[in-house]
Image 1 (spheres, rainbow, N blue to C red):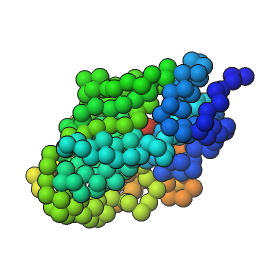
Image 2: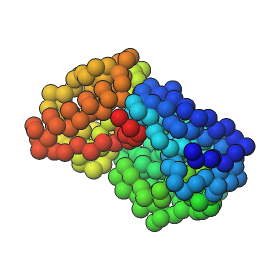
Image 3: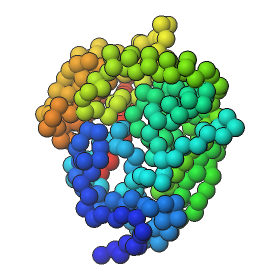
Length: 305
């Protein structure tokens, strides 16, 4: 049996991950580690046997943990990793800071990160997945990030290191993002807050925000996010090709493609991870059969079936 280091933070064996994901599904992780601070995280990763897999987890907003759980140490950052600092036109946020909070704090300072306001999740996930909407992406404003490598080294990562692409980046395996710095354009605070209120109203009108979902299920085949503008083109949007394939509202067990927005996979109450992933794969097949388009998952799926 592998012996794990003894951290100052909390290390829990056999932690059920369904309670930590927005979809409320999934089995247990071998261990859940919640570090006390950066040094605690560094020491733990340095002393953790190389044979033990590590999975950094944010707030679980874009994630399906399979029913068999995860044979790894899941690392979840909390207090101590959610600070937001603004200095000389730059916004530095801890990886555990919620995207919406960062957007609001930036707007208070007259800095425009409004695109983050309606993105579910935390800054670590936003950087890892190059999150974006309304035509803006994390990469557009990114300056640098700090991370702890699998060997426990504290490093600074540039945009070149991360090689941002649509809905992905090249974060080194086993590395844990701990903060990111952005240089957003300036704006008038009241106007920025008004724009975010408008974005929220549009989101609530078109997306199933009161259901258990994980945000957008599939990447847009067009390779870019919706702009939210009147001249936006929908032909190669995931929701459009799913709807055209007749899968809007489709169900499997307790899983459903939302009747409100075809690219949202929801847990209606008693779905398993197998229901959700199985329905997603069925959607991919139907879309391919009807249009020849292969949808790529945006939701990350991890663990054992």
